[in-house]
Image (cartoon, rainbow, N blue to C red; front, side, top):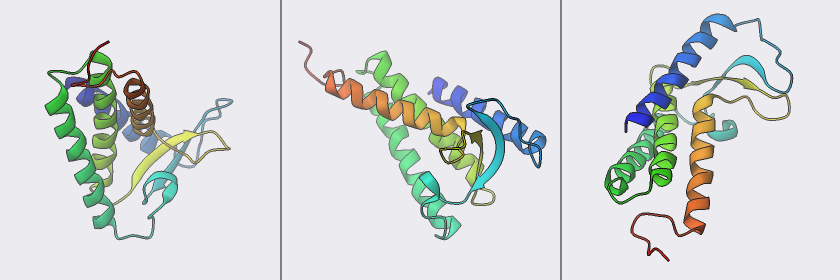
Length: 146
């Protein structure tokens, strides 16, 4: 849980910085630019037209489910499994906290060929990919070790 809190704090700090530093003045960085954007939807702006309270509630329920999974599996889980869940929880928590006041998530990483995203999104995706990889290895809590 401490790792999740650290990751959420890192993203929320970057979002606060982006809101102060980037409006109207993006920073070009080659393959990855810093450009302020706001997303009222979920991944790839899907559900952007849904009521903000619905998107916030659904993401809140999902975040709670990940927190419960982390809490329940942590004692028996490998460090990688726990780290993957912590990355997902940290990213989801940061996006939920950011979304709560106005229904929008602050994005600041821009490639030009992919929708603008934030560090919390990176944590969620990388954590999810790691869970899939660990599942293929039979490295999940309660699995039999060979």
